Image (cartoon, rainbow, N blue to C red; front, side, top):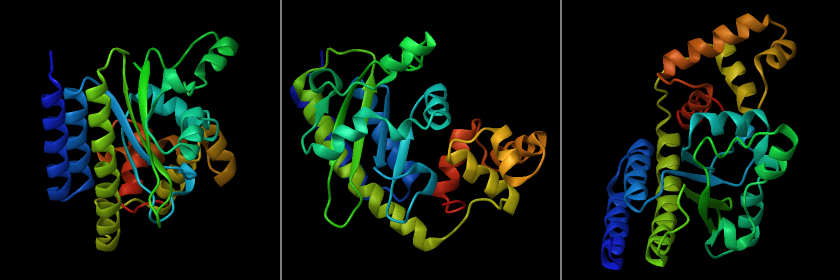
Length: 246
């Protein structure tokens, strides 16, 4: 059983790493490693902004299951996400059970007969609201399948999340200034990814940009290959972080 001292050491190790890493990818990997050692499986560090039009100064780092990420985008879930709504009003960390801030997928499940969060492994979470003067309000969510986490683990998450968000802001600004795209997307590939970020399907995009649905699909698949990712959600996120779409 992990001791309180061990949890504190994990948090301190991450905090030191967060000050040294040189890229958002390295920061994400360092946080996810510590996050899993604390007993959680997934995380997200996000600014509370419209995801389809990420402004300068916003951050989005995440390691979520692909199924849940697809659902989140396709159902425009960010507009009704109860956790993000609560985080805008709170200043202290809260867990989803005690605050009543559980994702609203239970209500959706009653309509559709399926709860997309459960197959994805999103059973229990802790949210750390982050409110920094001069920055967009944000939140860090850590998620797992087990509700039996010690208070020491939750305190460690709180400490780590503050430094994660601060480092993400710093590195996002640095990478934005460097303006070094990893790949070259065609104007049509960027346009299609932009509409994917807004939650549009291939069929909807085809109507918006007046090209065949199959052509839309091919543009998105080409962008995925260039970005070296497996899902369209990963393509959107990587394109945002690489300054390829906004």
